[in-house]
Each structure stands twice: as C-alpha cells, then as structure tokens.
Length: 226
Image (cartoon, rainbow, N blue to C red; front, side, top):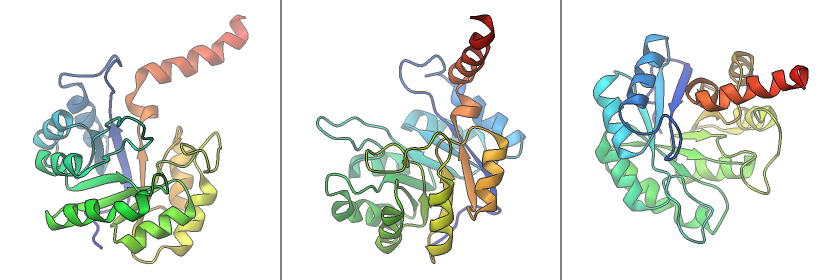
C-alpha cells in the first residue's frame, strides 16, 4: 500500500461528460489549474484527453478514470483492463476502479488491480458499502473511496455525503487510505468528512459543474418567484 499525496486535503474532480457544456477542448485543464492555484492537493479526471492535458499543465497527482458504458452492465468506472492501461498511459499516478459487489466484480477485479500495480500505479477502489470497502482493502488497493454510496441499489441513500460509512471505514481500515467522495456539496461537508476520519476529500460537481450549481440557485429562488 502506498500514498501518493504529500498532505491531507482537497482533491478536485474535473470532469465534463459528453453532451455537457464544458466537455471538450482544454476546459478541464483550466479547471485543474484553478484548483491547483487555490490549494487543491490532487485532481480526479476522466478520459485520456483530459488526463493527459491536466498532467502536462499541473504539478499535482491525478486520479484517473475512464467512464465507459458496457451493454448490459451497471459498471462503468474503468471497467476493464483496456481502460486501466489507457489511464496509466495517459499519465495518471492513481487508477480508480469500480469495486462494488455487482456482477461478480469483487471476484474479477483483482486482475485490474494487479495490472495497475505492475505498471507502477496506485489503485483507488470506488465502493458503495462498508463490506465493499473492507473487501477492497483485502484485494490490495491503496485507497478506498466512498464514491458510489447511494449509486448502487443496495447502498445507503442519503441526500448528502455518507458520513456513517466514512466513520465506519475510518475505524476499520488498517492499510488502505480513506478518501471521501460523493455528494459533498459544501465546505462544511468537506470539513466534516475530514473530521470523521477521511484523509482526503474529493469534490466535483459543487466546484466544476456550473450547470448543476446554477440549477441549485434557480430551484431555490423558484420558491420565492413562484
């Protein structure tokens, strides 16, 4: 197990999916530069184009993923060896993978973890439950992230970050480093995640997806506007 980051703090997820206003070009590179200038200690990025561009522009570790939809599958975060290799070739120091208990994933993901480690990259497990987090540690991942809590049918469905899950994992993980991710929408959420034991906090939509931020304002104001 190894930790790429030099100090506890904020990791900014700079992602824009195809069809979103900020997708393409160097927009996510500029987002990453802004995050670096403001004190972020790392970046999470999606896709070869953005990972490569961000690594060329910033001096921060990058958690890389490739979101790929496979027919008949709910697993889309770096689902196969092909995506693992692409993330590493693009320059990411850490590869994030879906390590949920879906579609026999916990029995097949070891190959992806071993591939990343053999290439010199660290591995982050995106999990949705306590049991998945502990299983991921046994599989040898370097980081366990609460990324998918609330995004699997059997995980805790809460409006904000899954603080209970974070607390349980913080008390129980002995080797893997805990990363808080998912539904962290305010600075207070991020601070609380650190307070209950996360070493790092990933924030994405609340910082880098202006269409969602704008929507929140519009919805709140609509109550008054009628």
